[in-house]
Image (cartoon, rainbow, N blue to C red):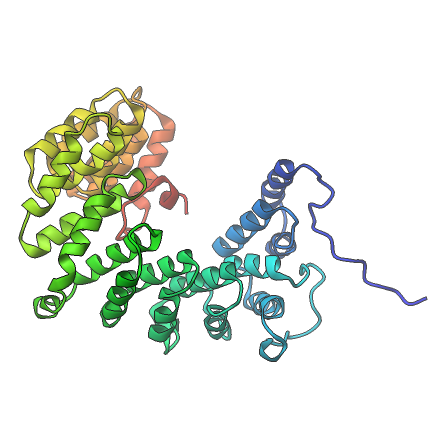
Length: 404
């Protein structure tokens, strides 16, 4: 008789309950085993029937990448899962037994697992996948390109992003706009404006493109900015509308202040932000955002509101006020933040420790050193040490970034 390879099965297929399956994944990868065994287990889980298992396995692989030859196998399998025959990348040998079946679900999981990977021929494959028939594939492929260092970006990046801006899937167009903004691709500003004018204000992509345009305008030269004066009024209206909604409040209020500072017209932002602050029956988190941005404009009303919230009774707004005090480095509030961080009983002492780290002043670092050595709570001593030892990044420190 001819021996046959048994059909592939997820290593978690014996567990019927989806939640238990996910917990088993987390438990299994923490057990004593070699790096190779852990990677093979995670790769096999990329084909699991349960989407959260695939997502969790992909995230762990992205954080802890396998060796180059295994990444090459994953790239070849990605090509096999998502590409047409003529575009397939050939594998270096026999498909490993732990590799899940080639299909769209597996391909999407592999894409997420290879986030940040720049090994050839992956960047060129990602470029092709930005035109895939499946919008989820286009989205993930563009996201992967976004995660690559500029040196690994394709030469035709501008045309790729221009095409993606008009993608019928709004999430793809939103990623394209953020890509252009984050990478300061000023040459694509006309394309962003063109796309913005084609969209209805009701479409989610419209506000995201507005935010991207605003960011680029605040980073171009004054001479270049003059060419786009005609778009300012439209941007202002959409940003003022954006600060009224919880989901978009933070980004919109920040962009509105950037726009006002760029134009040297502080009242352009002060008036609508004060209006938010004085509204009745509005969620306090929106008011915290408005107050935080008002402090950037030197507005006393915003500073007083934040100071009051730092000692308020609502946990959500108090925690958020502490966070923005640190991320915006609002110096007059530092004493309150330091007091909260020092208190062993305060519910928000951990949030305040991270806020102190974001102040990034010699005084704040000295206080953090003291907390790391002598805080009454052992866990908070550890958190203070981690905050001190986390490398400085452009974005504010969070609980997520401190545990990377």
